Length: 114
Length: 114
Image (cartoon, rainbow over all chains, first blue to last red; front, side, top):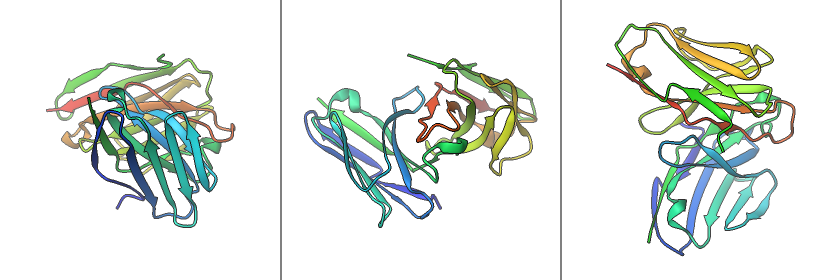
């Protein structure tokens, strides 16, 4: 079973709407989280990282981390068609230090309709 | 702007053949990775290399072997491919000792085994 689970599997959002993605880890060693986005035919690209409890905002994107419940979420405000992509939550034990590989979640496909 | 380059983009081969994929990064990173993305889009780490030393080696079949000539290059060789090796192989790079190091991905090599 995947150590990092995401929900929902897919999500349809109208242009200008809010998209909310969820991620839960089953391993308490994973304390550092990233959100990556992958457009079709491309490699994943980092959107943002979050390592402390609470909210972190970068432009239209807001991540929230609750370390006690190992739950992290991503909210996309004012969704644009260019936000249509596969979104991954990724976790690591050391935040990437020491060359640790990322453990990726199951992914959420976001479709933004004009 | 692409800074992690992978060749070839696509490769079709027969069961039992040997294949080799190339990866080069121009970011000055000291750690490189190979991930496998299967038909369900799940991303899993295969190998990571730091200063020509293998530092993470997940339980992948022995027919897979990473090969590095310097810290900017990490190739992947597959001896005697099998149908389940059909996937997209993604190369990534990062700094090993930089706190919270983001991983940068290439566009991937899609392998189809007939």
